[in-house]
Amino acid sequence: MKARRIAELMTSEPACVTAADSGETAARRMAEHDCGALPVVTPQGEPIAMVTDRDLCMTAYRHERSLGEIEVRDAMSQVVFACGADDAVEEVANLMRTSQVRRLPVVDGEGRLCGVVSLADLALEAGDDPAAQAIVGRTLGDVCRPTSGRSA
Image (cartoon, rainbow, N blue to C red; front, top):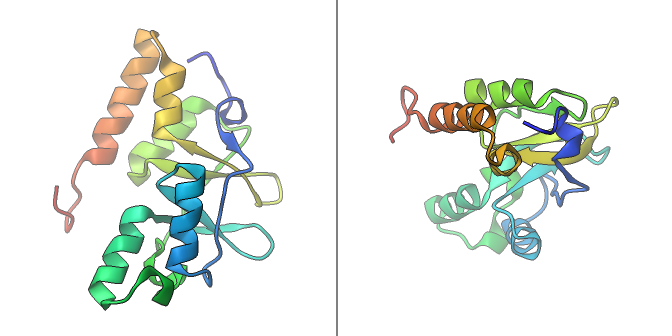
């Protein structure tokens, strides 16, 4: 891959939400920023989770509530994996593979959100480079592989 560090291909200053925000607020931000996931941050800007459009939809459905009646905390992931802006692209692809996630919050030296990197970013960066395409392909395959207790 041409980019050697995540800072070279991440989305800087990404949209985000807090755990106390409504599902409606999260959905609106996703629509405004044309994305399907947002980092959930503390008031200090530290990522504590991710929330996806699917998480919001399924939580609203299961609780028989509208998006305005649920909070992000009800739908967000229970674990967050993050990487650093100076991390190597290959290291981040490996973290995505082992954690089975498509998107990662990127943190600065103080642990505050400074970007988001996605599997799509890696794919776009790979371009026509066969070695980079192989990394992206392997990452996608591992991210999509069912785990025990999770259906395909």
